[in-house]
Length: 178
Length: 433
Image (cartoon, rainbow over all chains, first blue to last red; front, side, top):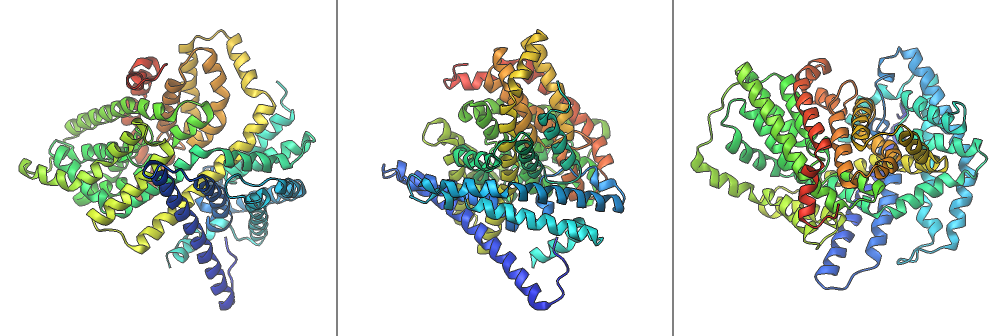
């Protein structure tokens, strides 16, 4: 989905950002796994249940999903229905890509103020065990919405210039192996 | 029914956006936001439903952990050893590698909980074994792999059953228990079909592994074979919740790979975590979209409307189940299983309850149904994955899969109309249903 970045510095930056995003997701998964093990260990071995592990796991679950969807997953990783779009001529594909991206960008942007006010409203609550303010707990959703707006605006603009998401599916793969 | 009501428009938009290639979870999210907009409700409700929904779905944490367990297993040499074991046991018969394929899926399904993970992990290896030296056509190897991967989520642990537990409030422990008999039944009918085809088409007989080597091979595979025992034992003895059992399964796989088989590297662990994180994000976005859309469905009172509509038709429990079978088979051939489970099944549950259908039994019927949908043309997801792995055309794979689909539908009808076969084992462990 990336535009061909000409400048080598930009290319390197994009690679670092992507690797960094991967590292963060791996850390989240590891945290979730380790806190689960700690939780079971403490409950059954030392008979002293930990309160914060449950909450940390749920935090990693929410952040992992939204972080992963925003910054790690490529479009082709998604669960989508591509039987139809796989078989239409290229000009039709381009039109569809523009329509879909416009719809996503418009809908998400229109809902952004209401979303913002829900998240900021949550600052009145703290999480039970860790005492994290709930607006912080949920703030990743704002990042997710913005990432989706940027991604789909990008897909739409690319389609206008006759570049489609599926075009660089193979190069994307190679880039990740590296 | 009004075809231009806000709800109808929402449904059209979901279908439209996903047909045009937008990921299904995102389609549901965007369309539900549009529903809130045109009905003049606060659009922040979408964020609220999504975040509070994820925040309260503690049991769903089993999903990333089961995926992680499977990834760790595929990383280590556990898979090799299990295949060696299966080969020693059933490889000696005509069409033996087909049997090895099915048996290994049965054993693996006791660990991974995802048909896709099974097909992509152990499935890929068995396909290589089967097609080496041209003994089996790639299409046949792909068909057996796809058909047997279906068993994965039916035998516990199972991601679809965790999702079903969430939407139906049925106990995940009993659901897992209920999956064992149907899973073994499906394994048996597949092996029967493979044996029949082997005879008709004169498939090769492999040189049998000498029986005196069997104890050694079993011993080598034993730590891996013990995994389902550890997992299910932990759940049924009441020591662990299914979610915790998932974490223990991942830990067990890691320990066995590291200590016994010495096959863990830093890069391997990193990749296992990364790819389970990706799978979690992918299914998590689907769940997120469904959470928001289910708010819309509930607000519109759809489950009750459907329930009234169906009771007005004076359906018996049996004809309702038959209708569910057919609807889910058709939908399963078009839509991805998780979507159906999270969106369509909640609409059917009130009616099923009203007709006195046991929720654990219904869960089994629905899951087996949806899993068969994974290999039903035209949109069986596993068919595409197999096409991808073998490079064989989907059409050829579909042709080879049809006999297997036929016997599996037979098994599905049995599971549907003989609830006692499903509920026997859970009842033995104290299920009151």
